Length: 433
Image 1 (cartoon, rainbow, N blue to C red):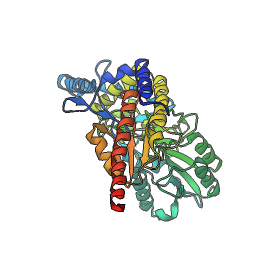
Image 2 (image 1 turned 45 degrees about the vertical axis):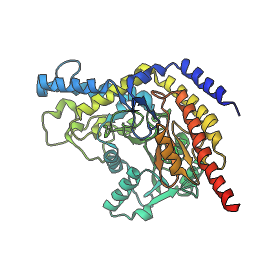
Image 3 (image 1 turned 135 degrees about the vertical axis):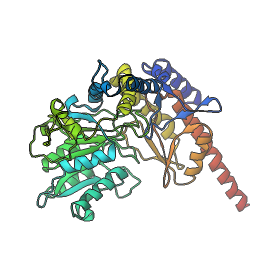
Image 4 (image 1 turned 180 degrees about the vertical axis):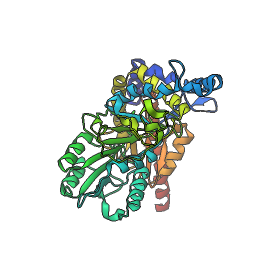
């Protein structure tokens, strides 16, 4: 094991040569007592870009100056704002711009996608999901099935590792698809499991689903802006996400969807419709019959939330400036440091339940005293989160976290563990004596 000084110097060297390190200055870092906290909660709520307030103020100024004409006037018209987001999102998701729509929020979009892409037909009516999926997925699927008059317990096939606190092997998912191939209509996975931080082999899962004649949908809440995706090339049928985690769109930020282009001209597809999904050229003619756009925006329902779009644009402009490829490369190096500096401290006191296939997040399971460890970390200025019954999650983000912060976390964690568990050993010795 390398010395403390060596790790500290290694972290400093990485920070000094970091090509995207300067973009940390584009964000507001939480403080306590005049000192910046170490924020490892990008997997829960991304930090606020300093440009967000100005972006929203720009919308307010347009509104005050032009009123409703702001939708149509100038190069920065509200009507074109949505489309100005799609190029960056296409890079981040590995899709084509016309396969994307920025709209609603995650749970609403999951419901809309189920209407269009869950197509029970005879024996093929089951939905395969990961166990311990995020509640957005579980609640939406179960309520949708109940609405259709189907029993969720008979329809949902859950894949698990035999232990809800362990990652699921990709092979178990693929084998389950094969085993239930005659019955599965839809495979619905989180791209990254919110609890373990596991990044599923989505290309292999999609291929297995296609062989079984099933559609594939993804909840990318914990994956978008975090890991490399190739939704179009993997032939994912649909995906949904929120924008307030790694995309830094703000609390309750506008969500988004991806729909493979092969569905854009499909006349038979079912969808719930709203006027903003109507063709733009005839939208304001107020016709009785819906005329869908010929891309993913056909699934839009309502007038877009312009201020939320502007907030998201403020963050995406930083992604553009930093470069998505460079951010991914930094993330890989951060993973290496987490493994070397943090996971190596585990021993009997904690273990990492996040497999090697991961994004920013690391999940540490504590058999004992986990809550006490979490509380002491918080007191020392580290913002991580606690998930019952015994897991601490942390997610250093390449846009605004540093390698030195990872090293500082590892040192604080080591000190806390030594204090907590050495006290326990001393107590036991006193009892014996």
